[in-house]
Image 1: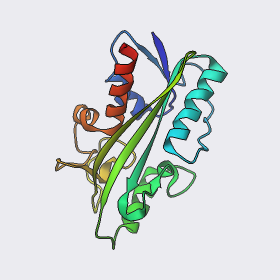
Image 2 (image 1 turned 90 degrees about the vertical axis):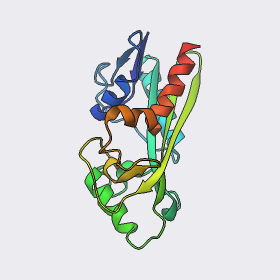
Image 3 (image 1 turned 60 degrees about the horizontal axis):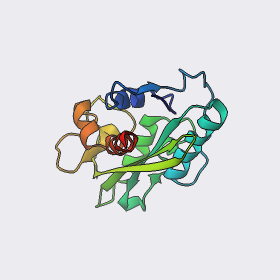
Image 4 (image 1 turned 30 degrees about the vertical axis):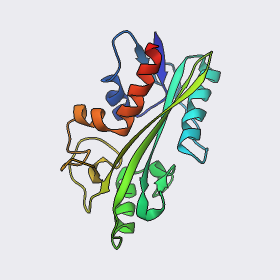
Length: 190
């Protein structure tokens, strides 16, 4: 079986490839010749995932899954949420996003947050959605050099290391994307 993962993000692709069985060939957007930035104009995380998966299916004809992820901070009423990638501006700069978030939380007592990933699978027969959530809190400073995005400032519940400090295998087991991928793989087995 061949399945496109609608991403240009090599870090995401690497994380997800580790979770897939060998009988599913995972293709990236580059592999299918898609060089354009797929629009993400929905106002929800699920809407963006659906939009990307449908775009690839309609334009390229491949069965496809796409994800969208948001960091939802309780003290900021769920922000940055659907705007996580471009929180500090349209250039999608991870460092600037983290600095802005840490600055906004400086005087806040609560630092609880959650990462949420929604995956939309689009085939000839159906579109199906899977969700993974991991709860935790935002640290006061960046820690670790693994991962990407907000990983250096997200401390998952029950752990003493941020996502950027944890080995990828552990992050995949407990993380939002890993949970959503597991649901997707369970669905594909049936």
